[in-house]
Structure formats: structure tokens, C-alpha cells
Length: 131
Image (cartoon, rainbow, N blue to C red; front, side, top):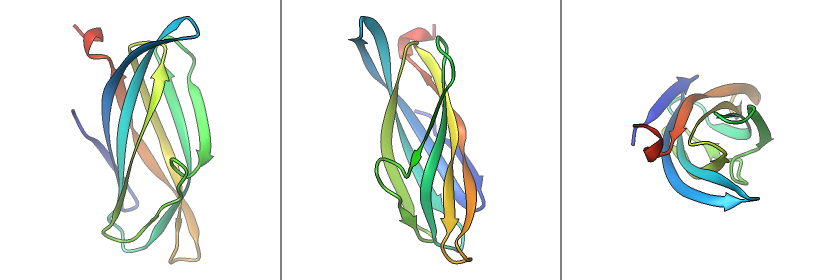
């Protein structure tokens, strides 16, 4: 498993991905992928994650755009030197895909200044898809 990282304004995003398996849904084969994201605050200010924006790439489908509040039902406050880790996943129609996006955050110590933290592109591939 390879870790992908990116730092924006002192906020480090680390992503690990995994292949979870295949199953049939609506008479079609689907491929399930999981990912673990760690958001580490390397800045000097407490921040809060308020929303997310995702672009999901599936080699057999159009790009899917997802926007929503927080992550997995939470809007974590991350103090300097602390981190927040969560697990999620997605279903693809193909064995190969990718995701990228950003989090919208608020700096809680500077008049609630809003800023974006970019999530690096991370790829999905079923182990049997790459020969």
C-alpha cells in the first residue's frame, strides 16, 4: 500500500487505498474500493473541516462530482499538532479509477478565515486488472 500526501497551508493530507472486492448490483459487476485519509494539522492555528468536494473518475463512466458537509457526518476541529483519520469508500463500474478533491476549512483563530485544502489524486486499481 502506497501513501499519497500533499500539504496545503500547513494541513497535510495522507491517503491510503485498498481494493475491497467485487459484487453484483442492478445486474452489473461493481468494484469496491476503500480509502483511509489522515488530516494532520502542521500549522499554528486550530482549524475546522466544514465541507468536501470530490471528483471521482471511473474508466468506464463520466466523472462524478460530489459535494457535502463534513466527512462521514463530522466536522472535526483539528488543533495544531493533532490529526483526524477516517475511512470511506466508493463503487466503480470498472477495475481502474481515481479520486481527487478538496476540503473547505475555517481557521478558527483568524476571524474564521475560510480556505481550501487540496486532496491529492489517488488511484484505484483491482489487483487482477494490472498484468
